[in-house]
Image (cartoon, rainbow, N blue to C red; front, side, top):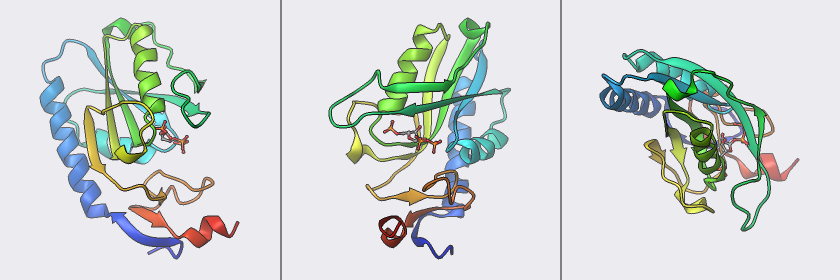
Length: 183
Ligand code: PRP
């Protein structure tokens, strides 16, 4: 185990079971759909989850990416999400977008993005997250597909970072407090 990790929260085996389950749910829900199913990776944290998940989906899918960041704190809600890389597709009215996230925290990012992409004209917009921290919500938001709910701990690995480190770990772990308190 990486020396900066206090404990493993979601193991490689558990992640494998989660991606298998969600891929089967996506296959079931979108089978026979007449639109183009687009898995929309929200950079950067979702890269690893997206890569594993897409390999297990058997119906035809396309992929695309966006990069966003949310600012502000306290009671501020939507409107403080900045789009660094937008989704530009002339065929958006034919697209069933499935937004892929690594984690939902306040809910601000996905709440904003869902509305933004619907307003932009997508045929449909759904959301999928590996991890969910419902105790941290600032806006009411529930994903359509969820890997697992986790407690409010500082998690890293499997795409998630601390100061851009630890994204390549194959599991989700809790970061040792001395790593972030000592820097
Ligand atoms: C994380 C995560 C979501 C967002 C969730 O991204 O990937 O996009 O925060 O937080 P929210 O529910 O409070 O809006 P982050 O800004 O850490 O960027 P990264 O994926 O590039 O690490």
